[in-house]
Image (cartoon, rainbow, N blue to C red):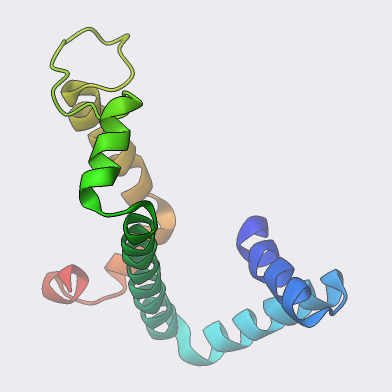
Amino acid sequence: MGVVLYAPATALNAVTGTDLWTAVMSTGAVCIFYSTVGGIKAGLWADSLQAVVIVGSLIAIIVKGTIDVGGVDEVIRRGLEGNRIYFTEINPDPRITYSVWTMLFGNSFLQLGLYTNQMIAQRLLACGSKKKAQQ
């Protein structure tokens, strides 16, 4: 949680020039006030908005990067030249870093760890129904 508080405070410090610890304290105060007044509903809305911003930013970066290098064909060409595209590696050897199997099984276990922590479970349980949690 320290990083969650420190990262926006660092950005605030860089943009406004305020003292770093003042930015940390003010960021913490705003978050505490927002969560206290809004409760779990405020947290859910903040998480939803954050997800939209992250996905939108990712799409914008991919589109901008693809345009900058000269299009999708150029991205694929560079990936093939640099041996960075591993869609066809089906060797079941677990020592191979990137293969179809490591992506399927390794990423599945990674995602289980990311989406089954206390914070996610608490937010899903606070939704009240399975349908609301799925939304």
